[in-house]
Length: 135
Image (cartoon, rainbow, N blue to C red; front, side, top):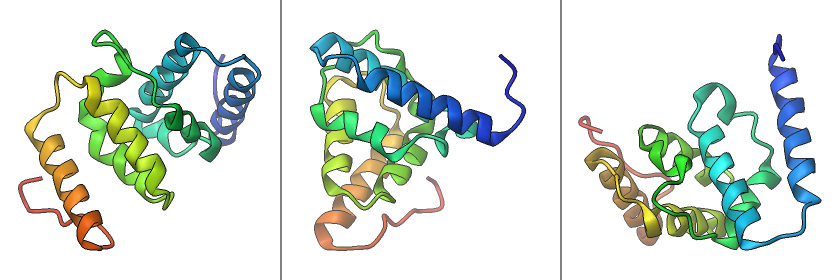
């Protein structure tokens, strides 16, 4: 399928969310949906088209195994965290960090420092993590 416009991507995302939402929840379904969601979120062209309700799958906090492709997208980590944070739902941020960090085996130094600044900022009441020039 050839996507000509951003609205096509948004429509595909809405269809994907509708399809996965009618499947009865099991651990396997949760793992697959969240893995797919993380893979989509790692693509900067697709990330902004993720419907807000799709992020709510993170609340189930499925345990993702080390072979999960969505966990291997660490280069987009700070952008994904920022997007979720902009939803202004601490529960979603918490769930995301628990899902990703619980099984993350390849978290790079930059991503780790960025997350630690985010957590410190949240705990101290800052509106956003402070970024140093090196991150």
